[in-house]
Image (tube, rainbow, N blue to C red; front, side, top):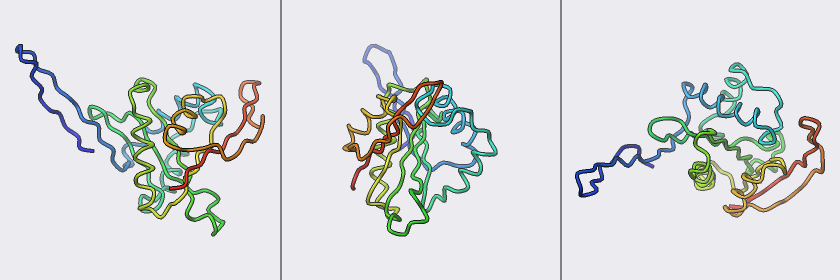
Length: 183
């Protein structure tokens, strides 16, 4: 996707600018925004199993582990602001029979939700995953996250597993779900 703005004239002297979203590989300078977006999900509850915000030291370690040549992190920019991110991460990395499987994770800034950002990010991950040697994508989420379940199903992910009531968030149980897609 290309970043930029296009001039559109409405014919009546009114001028609109159309901004194009860009998805690009994340850089270390993006980490504060990536972390802020993730911590929004922590505070929202049931979007992640983390209960406490992630600090920058933890985020930097996470990012260092995401080698862009194998386990990339991508950001989507909207009007030159990061609106969300997606990552491909290891799934049971120490098991050689699973090296073709990646866990996909995606998060969208709460101010940008409902604008198609999650779909653009997930579509990008599905499109680029084979180039990194992945033939299977796994998404691990909680059953109390219907927006994410709907998005995954829209892109052809199906339910491959359920661990009933194992997550405990604010005294509420939630099922841990596994959704998968063979590419």
